[in-house]
Image (cartoon, rainbow, N blue to C red; front, side):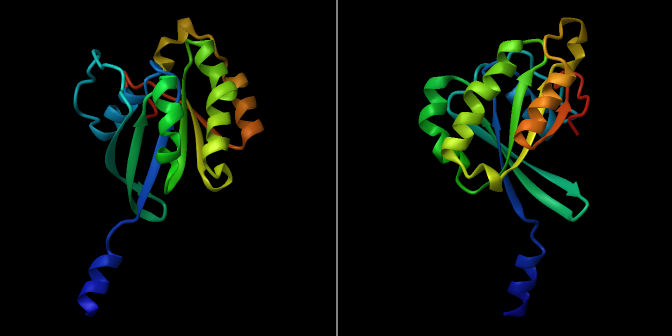
Length: 170
């Protein structure tokens, strides 16, 4: 009996994390880079239909955790119907925008934060804002300052990444 208790306590805790954002911002590429950092990035990724998820063991200051990362479809027709399911037992949410696409950033406040507040107890979720495609600095449409103001308003951290180069993904 004590062996069973010991084996279950050594199992790392599971944290479900949901990624939200418009279609084309790079959610699937970010998940691919995080879960397979040594594999070349596939540039011909088709749009996610509904949801996909992958898991990754992560080292944290409190020990190892198993992150189950849910890559959601950015299209309205999928997200509106499936969002309540996405958030069931979620511990965190990553809101992703494309730094070269101002519309993808604007929809965070207009659409995704509204959906999040309607379908989840957002006070209980850890939230992270991720500006993807920072490798395309010359085409930037969203300033870091604008993103930081958004984070201050909604109580979250901010990070800029590049799924293509791997910058700030791991």
